[in-house]
Amino acid sequence: MRRLVIGIGLAIGLAAVLWFVLDRSEAQAEVIPVPVAGAPTPERPRAVLPAAIPRGGCASVALGRHREDLGDRAPIVEIRRGGSVRIVTGPPAPSSPTATGSSGGAWRAGILLPRLRLTSLSARERSALLEVLRAFSGDSGLRPEQIRATGVAFRPEELASLLRWRR
Image 1 (cartoon, rainbow, N blue to C red):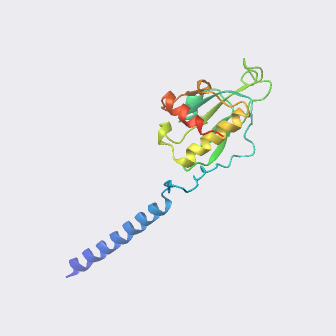
Image 2: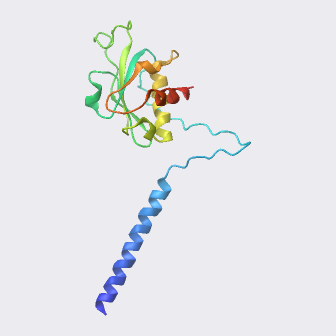
Image 3: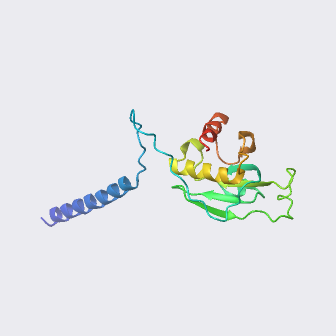
């Protein structure tokens, strides 16, 4: 009889834990809007960038998964899971070699991504990436050939498709 009571107690405890975990993961799941005919298209989620992020003047950007992938680039910005953005290293000093590269004062930036593949990014992470690219490029915009992968995987057409969303 004692074994039966212990078994039932364990089953109830396990069920409660599973219910809590599943309920929490369901609440955190990203809702992807489904377009309905005649309904306005929802805007992509906008990322909030740190105020200290450098704006305009970027000559090239490297996308990587780890700090070591990006070499001596500065600034380096990290896009975290969920789409939050943080500055890892600030912009280069005006007298440093990376700040006065071959592009007449343009700098080379790095972006750390939370996932290995560009196509695996969530909507919020893609939005954050686009906002960072927009800030780095200023009015000129970055061309696909100015963006290279070091530690992440993407095909040229995936990058071109992503950049078309840039406003």
